[in-house]
Image (cartoon, rainbow, N blue to C red; front, side, top):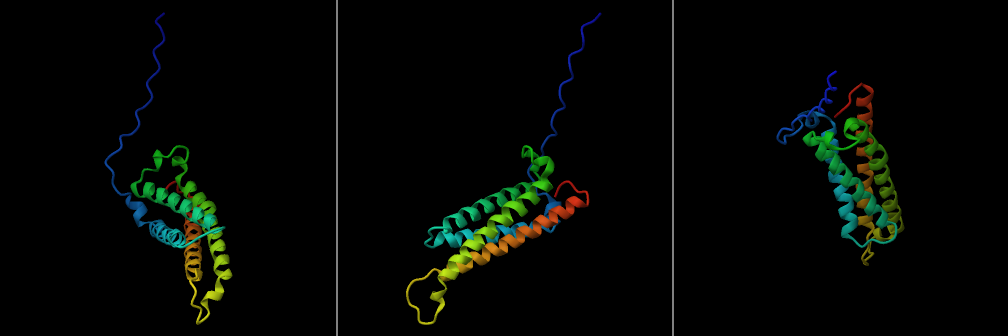
Length: 172
């Protein structure tokens, strides 16, 4: 009786071609939403970081930067079509995007908008005519507005991803 045949080697992973843009992502409504998220998120955390901040503004800055960095990573991987490189999440890329947008993006930016809105309300006396002392009211108000708009864009893109998933799609 001959010895058993050795097991077949595992199939080789598909060869990756050169980096190129993932055109279906660029044509989808998700691309301009991501661009808006990145621009408003950068405006939010740059506004907070450029001015004197203390107390809860530290959390707002942390939340804005974390959500912005994650959105940047998702955008880059989606733009290049390389989400298969992400362990565990690459196979569920559409759900990963929806979870990021709804839980992390919208949640963190909404919290940052609340914090900065509260700080703006506490400094609203600065908007009186004739007030000449330095005041951060406008900076806090601008950061709150940018964070609120970024949260709304994250909510829209999360709902778009869920709608796509419901229609049976698996990727962007």
